[in-house]
Length: 89
Image (tube, rainbow, N blue to C red):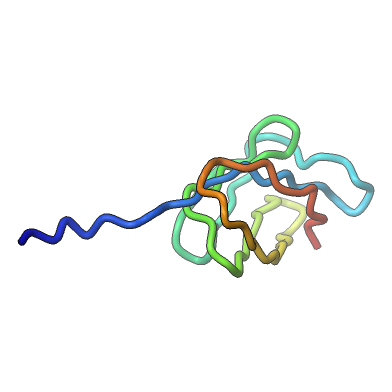
């Protein structure tokens, strides 16, 4: 028997907004769960390729410092989702 190490991966688009409920501008760098890097896209969306039960996204706002969001993902479905908006603080 061969073990290919396959496992289910749940991905999703996370929408991030600022304290005024405006989408973050495209181009900001995002650190996902301390492991992966991504970039904010249009409408403040970030693709998260491996959603965990507990997720932490840290956004580098360049001259404006940093902000982060923490959220829980609880779904039994295994397809891409649109999540949020979450306020980056």
